Length: 313
Image (cartoon, rainbow, N blue to C red; front, top):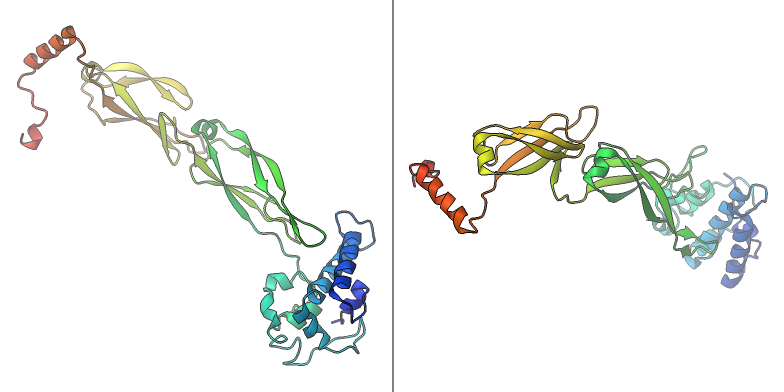
C-alpha cells in the first residue's frame, strides 16, 4: 500500500503547532467539501484531508504516526513491520479508538497503522448509514381508508470543522389501507446518512384510542348496546362500521356478551378482517313512577324467573 504523508496532505511542516493544523484543515475542508466544491476529485481529497486531520489533531495518534519515521515519502510502497506500528497488534493500543466501521471510512494505510491488524483486500464498499425506526400514530379510519401524513425527523448535519449542526427534515408519508397495529412501513434511503448512502427508515404503526372500535390484527370489535325488548323479541338495528353503517338483525332471545360476526367488515387486505359485534343489554332507568310501575308488573309477570339459578342462589 502507499505511504500517506499526512503533513503534506494538510500542507504543514512536521513540527506544525496544533493551531496551524486546525487552520489548515478548516481551509482545505471548506475547499474540498463535496456539497460545495467544484474542484476535481473533491470527494477523494476531502476524505484524505479528514483522515490526515484525524491523526494529526490528536497528540497520541500523531506520536504513533511520527514513530514510523520521517524517511518515508508519499506514494512509496509501505509495509509496516510485524508487531510494530501497524503490525498485528496495532500501535501502542491506539486501535482501541476505532471500530472497523470507523476505520473503513479511511484508507488502507490508516487501517494498517491504527486498525488492530485490520486489513482490507481490494476496494471496499462505502459504509451505508444506519437504519432508523420511529413510531407514527394514526386513527383506525386512516388504517381503513389509507392516508398521507407528514412527519418531522431530526437530521443533524456535520459542519466543515467537524461540529454538529442541529437540523430537521419533513417527509410526506403514504399510509396504505389495511395496515395493522405494530406493522412497520419501510422507507428506503430515508434513514441515517453514511458514506455509502442513507440507511432505511421504518415507521411503526400505532393506533390512537378509538371511542367505539378496538382492533386485533385486521379484525375490528364493537360493543353494541341493545334494549331488553330488542334482546328478547329480536330486532333489526343500525350498526356503525369503519366502512359505514350497516343493518344488523338481532336474534330473539339474545343475551349480553353474545357476539355476531360481520364478515369482511374489518380492515381491508388480500384477506380482509371481520367486524365482531358484542351485545350489551342496557336497562332503562326507573326515573319516574310510571316506569317503576312497569318494572313492578314485569317482576310480577316473571316472578319465578331466577337469573342466578346456576349459582345456587
